[in-house]
Length: 554
Image (tube, rainbow, N blue to C red; front, side, top):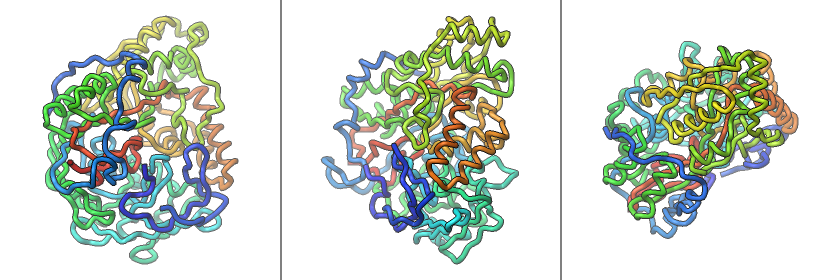
């Protein structure tokens, strides 16, 4: 799969040093080092039948299906025309077209179609230039100059430095709760300025080595200056707005003047189908052509019949249980430590993911830059878990675990963990929440919930979810000394020293954090047999995930 945006190579962008494992950019010791390029039926399929069965699945990413770079491969050249209908998990009446409010994957996919960011993450989670043609730091890493490429909004206006500053200042508004606010925190937006129409000088509050990640932050889309309503949004993305009915459907049309080349499709339609059974039934019935996030059991049941193609997106989601660390019983770190030891991660991956993934170690970002892979893999230890619970005065602990069918494997994992906890004397009651409002419901309420996260750099996960002022802090992890350590890591130019600081933070989370990360799931996308150009190696939240401008109908 290509890591630079298809159709044209990006202009020069500063890339001072390259990270280990994923090849991510980590600007530090060297500067400016060259260029780089409404369907809502209940479910009828059970999940979970083991890793061996999943291994028999013939995945499109391993042989069949279209080429990921849009070149056509053995499917022939791309064809122009037609409407593709896509369905995602979640959705409902809480859907939004405001790209700065997007939290659901359906919202994120729509935002990607309508808008653009200055940069986005490649499959290796390195930031790739998008609206930004290049970025260059000064020697002290506290001032970065971003040069925009030539691009236009859907109404014909050019994308300018004023639009960029307006968008970022909107996201950073202290009166709002936009998800990317924490990611933009290092920017001194009051002091930042437009040098000219295509050049932005960003002043930073402190040296920031990972500045390009800020440009690629989830939801950091550029909107026209003065935008305050998104009922009929105007963006610079590959598709332009036609209609929107929350919880029902969205229709978008090709933008002929898109800077990265007009999409092959005439139109793109998002159809509401929150439950997996609704998505697969719609795909089989010819009502949609793209079904996001199918379970391995569902994929296995239908792929061999030749009616659908299955594409595997490796390591797309962290699978976890989130413990609220600011309230009983999880305000006692001994209870959290006990729950870490209750989990049999291999059983959870086998049962909840049908083996389509790998075990976790209570940390986000396995395989990513800065991941603390030197920590010992945590194993189930029920005797030690009982000892910790007794020391905390919680021998007869009763806990409610919130879950939902909003995501594949959630309800299965909840049931498996309930049975595992019973062996340690903990009674877990599984409570099923409404899929349409699950993510907002569990952010502040409850004590324990099923949780997941798509791909992003580890430092971005820390800023979005684990700082005192993070807007999606689901574990209510509030520690000023932890915040300070994060700021120190951000400002450290030397890569080895920066890695050591992130390692210290992860060791603390591994010991006493609130995320019980039991696995990392591969996601399965189902498409109609005439769909081509779907990227095969694009984890969720990366540039080529749900990138419908490069998809066509054969």
